[in-house]
Image 1 (cartoon, rainbow, N blue to C red):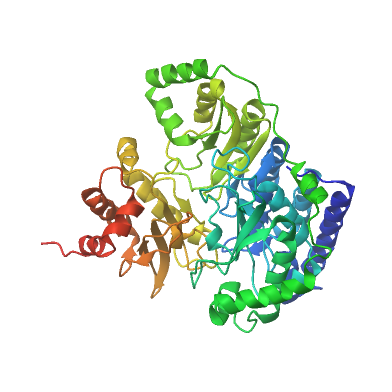
Image 2 (cartoon, rainbow, N blue to C red; image 1 turned 180 degrees about the vertical axis):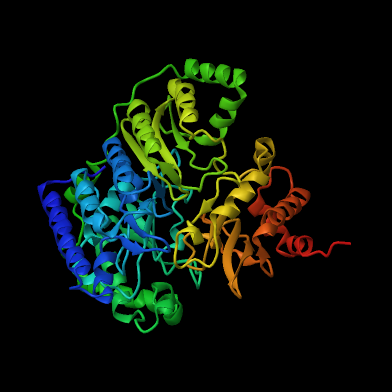
Length: 554
């Protein structure tokens, strides 16, 4: 991962000092709330329902153990002893005092962390596949390109006040684990007929009030032109995006209004003005970016022996076998496996971790994965480089600390925003609905029989829980001051991305577990052998689910 040089340290220290002065002036009454608003947003600080919320940047989801330990200390000292992993692969603190935020930022700077551009109308944290660099289906490691985008976009003077927030995701694998079509810009790494690396570029995706999937405006962009082409896209958006209505200010609205062909034409025209300039990536620049992601010091193993030991351990310990099946991911290096630490035990808000758990993750990373972790956009944590010989030992340690729930990819591994328990924008609470559904589906064998099933929950139409692209999506709505929940079916964040369709009228909180149960029952009754929920839905459509859920009791 990228490590700061002296210029980076100086820049972040100066930013902390600047915000400390702004905060002091605000608290002294020298800055109005309106004047302070854009200043705090540029430093990741929101005002939530009950307290401020500070969003901390985790570039492309990667952290090292020293950063986790510092986060643990900060949550104990300045918060209520826990933090929250987000769908942007960032970390949030939900209870800091406003006057303490400059001190928090100063402590973060000591371990090369910050909150710059985690909010506001700017280019946010660039995200990618949590298995980047280790996945067997990966064409090229996307992390160096994410780092180049991060450096290009951070403090970019032209893009500090865009019409609206702006999100970029990069995928380097055949399987899209970064939801690139749901982003303002999605970048898919590809190879042309000559074996040269380049990018397919998607533009105009986004969820929220008007969910739209991005469209490809270039099928092959040469590697050296990545930043200049992104520059052209954002320039066109910055010039033409609406600023009179924040609900129509995202790039997806501009692309829809102009049409993809016209938008692409304008980007190409703008690109002609900037290509081959200062933003062009030389071979040296790309090599430099790759140097921050060297291969760890992998060991060699007797693969047959390791596999035999794993089979014996799984055969004698059913709980370990379940965890091995659900929470580990194939590694491109023989003898290793990637492990997902689940943050979704029943009764715990998805993505929440305590200070002690943060320290435990740091310790696990040091013992089993070269001191590195990745935050996933599903709000879990990945140890990417675990020796297969140590998986049983890691499982025992993970179970001790509450990270061994064997539910990755199942219905209870749900994405869930903080909702009305915290967020001032939310129409309804998300966390109680998540827990109620988890308690209803507490039979692991049944969950495994259902197979891969994405359930996403958002407390409002801003869609921080990505409900539009869940196989089952739940949206909190307000009906005359009462909390209700709308259900959508058929969404997908994969390379075959789709947006869910509304099932029908909304439900009360008490009705939600039974409603999801009926939806699952229809799937079980109609599926073909080995068919997943999304496949069954695509084959039979919405109507059978609708008929069952809204059938009147006889």
